[in-house]
Length: 68
Image (cartoon, rainbow, N blue to C red; front, side, top):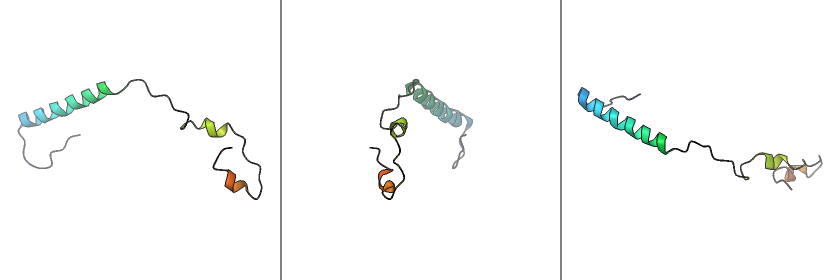
């Protein structure tokens, strides 16, 4: 949605502004990659779940963040 905040544009000026906005949106959509990027190993949640969880004990809290 486009809203005129200030001024009183003519229909021609409004049509020209809308044409520019639509052209920019079409250009951005064409430039965007259509194939999603593969996750790298750092952001893959299975890298953390692949390790065994530490057994309960007095020092378990210190080892829960970093997988060994």
